[in-house]
Picture 1 (cartoon, one colour):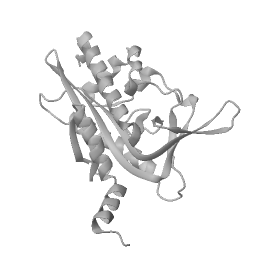
Picture 2 (cartoon, rainbow, N blue to C red):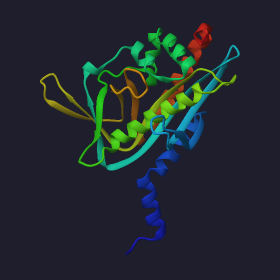
Picture 3 (tube, rainbow, N blue to C red):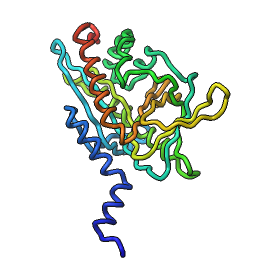
Length: 259
């Protein structure tokens, strides 16, 4: 029996990732984030307008000063072809580098540098260092276009564009902002690494951290979180707690916001 138009449309929409974008936006909105879907930005390299799936932000006023943290999400549907993260303990970086290599506008760079001096913040999920961070990522069972690379690049490029847009503001609304690029995957994610016997190990993950030695952000590292759909709600909750911890640290030490 042939499929109905409704069934065909639903199948097509799912493969385009639209339900994933709506799913993420709903969860983030429920957590109190200010959410924008299908936001456009100007690619800093090509000058072309591009679309990013979700931008979710939280802002607080501390001693009459604003501070903003944002998640930038690129959503991808890949149920038939899992994604692979190539990881190594040798790719681990310090908490100082983890904080300093964040996309941030000019006042945000000063704030992130000061926050890097509080390693106790590492207990919060979004700020935690992975014991075995990934250095590369790809999609399995394919030899064509590298969808994984393009998704990671899109999230990082959007973060760069938002930073540039913020830096070009010449008004009182110019305040510290840190931006965390994320790729949300509707599919399976696996980690590939060498064990102590130098044998290849493969383990399924719910999420992972890519510490990319590709200076997209103008920094030594580009740090991205790659999260599966099944674990996204937990990730979003951890991100909210992480941002709340950063706000709390700034309230405890107001000079952090002196930029």
